[in-house]
Image (tube, rainbow, N blue to C red):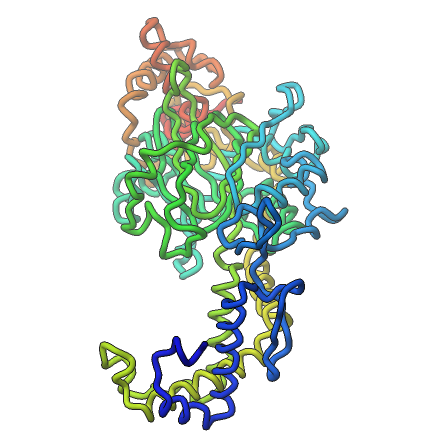
Length: 567
């Protein structure tokens, strides 16, 4: 059967069989042909032949029985995951994951039916009374407790977001290194990320000013900036090899990034405000690698994907979680949806699981290269005639045989050297390296958070300027600064007033004028919207001026010396 359907003649076959390794390869090929001819797939309940030089192995791709159980089919495109994840449902599993997914049974169901297969929304089951609005508070949800990492993340509150922004701003002041450059926050305007050269002259690397200007803020590796997120990622690593987080802050009626697909699986956790999400049904590239992410790096999302149906079309509110598998095209915005005219800002945490880095094809390719690179012969160029002919049959026979023998010998080396133990050790070292880069910064953030509020109240008595902004909360009181107070900033480099988003500029200008007209009487930031006079202004304020907009505006005024913090 093999000779009849091959493209080589009897003379070439004789030369090939002169090599024992090549002869073995021909024998294996003949066995495969025979199995195909007999209609078998090499499973234990069918006729099976093994190579005498290699141990019998089960096929690495899972199979599933058809409805009539008369045949089996390859499960490459099946929705059933080919690998078991039973270990994640043990007693040592992530507390946060069980809280999100609904306990141990929900976690088992997730890994059996959802993981790497389909997007899924997990609604927050806690009532408003369960949430604790104070910074660092806990909450209860479904199967979790009030102190589980998921609840602490959701309850980080507005001040937790402010602190994360402050920490992110500090990244611009650190000495530039390859690692620090990759961790710098990003600012998006009109769905396009600004370069550092564009950001500095517009907003002075001030993320609060950028937010006032209507920009979205993307904080990469926020698990190194925010203690709640640090604790959440550490907890999730009980279930996953490694987890990190990015944060997305989007003002009302805006969109941070255009539709795209990622090279990783993600959990989107809504922390503040709300956001509308669409996940499209058609997957243009199954399980993409970094260079295959549509909607990024010049790769266009195919129009039929965006014109087709959605598998998820919903609004996430505080505490809701959306799981999106690798490769599924998605987009999100804070624009009003349908008949609902509600416009809110959004702050969500995206937990990233770099599954492209855990894929067998990538691991095999890397491991094969590392294995063969140890043999000097395989670092040399292959016979020069290979690739210089349109038809492989035109390659001189001697060079064809030479390459065949090299390939056969290489396969034998790979079969011998590439084992489960080797792959396990390679991944173990990789995971340890990632954790060693993240864990020290995470632990430092967690430790700092324990005494942060006490240090702030004991040490910081500034009423205006850069130090005073660190005291500001929604409960703070402000008033116009006196000339004597403004003189305290004589040695401080003056800061330019930020460019404010058109939809909010009028309201914020009216608020500042009202504060100045109060004859020095303090007003609480919580009450600032009550200072606007006209109904139209209040309507606009209700749409676009959120609490974070007010805080960012007052911070700018205090930093520049226009207002003082008095309580």
